[in-house]
Length: 416
Image 1 (cartoon, rainbow, N blue to C red):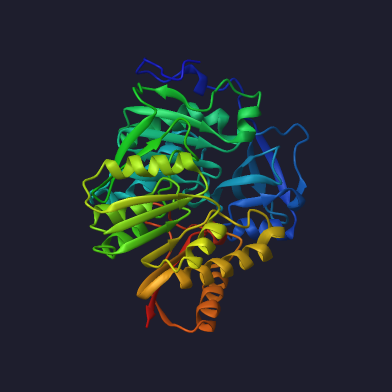
Image 2 (cartoon, rainbow, N blue to C red; image 1 turned 90 degrees about the horizontal axis):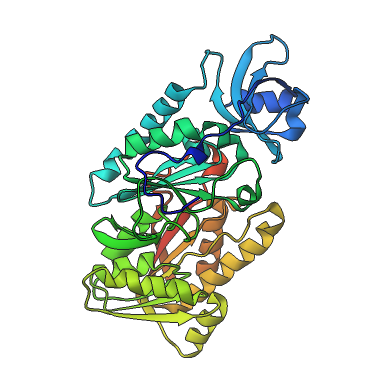
């Protein structure tokens, strides 16, 4: 399939040949309680009874154990330990069709309206389970809609969901991104990065975030091309960076760096292990008017920070926003140690009366645990500090269940 589709109709590849069937499902007590309480996941070991010929994308109609009443409807996933991803909870009868998905997308869009009234034309339209679409993400960059699919469960429904997303977002172009597992799947003819609606002259798309210009590679970039969840924090850091020196650690495409520069920072240093990401950060900076200097450091963050400390370099504002350190339960303890190390390193790099911003996107490390780690490390140092702000996801990343709350960020002002 030609990735740069010239037709303004939807590509036929979004239509699946598989017609999903209804499955009758009964769960054990634990699984049933999860469903009744509104949790979006049903694990395989919670299923007591299900059809033998179940396939990914089939509608799992969940009946109560005793009264034989429908307590919820989900999508069956044959390839995941989370065997059923829930679409609907409760006893009221619903039909999973075009209108069902359209209304849910409209509801999600209504939650983003306050953000779209600002000088911002990039936002997350669908945030997976939190918006009732488990395993599906939809991000908008100006007039380009990027839909990332993480599971085969959505393949039979794309031909009704994607046109609805396009209609509501008014996107002129729709791009499909696939998870690694879906790229290997033989259940579809989609290609990762395929343009399934409209045209795309350049895979790098420019957009605006609170009046600051950025770009995202919607075809080859990480995730959907950019990280939108920290938008409010980037704006806040920018507001507090005027005439300051700023260090942006794990900078990737320079989100914090560019906001700082655009808001009058004197000097900004972007640090990342990827030289390619730092080139994008510099290009993003150039999309805006600024007078400060933009420096870059390529290297492992832990080693690079230690080297800066050796040279007694300090910054007025230090932002440390690492990738997830705990993608599985076995990594939680190591993640905690890494967060403690970064907190200690950040303290040494923050100048007198400076600001240290510490963030985590590890959902397995709870916010309370993360802030406790930072508090203990900073309290054990010789300097006084005070948390002046604590934040979570931006408004286009609503939290619908406990595991959906992954982002936390603390702002610590040193009192020297």
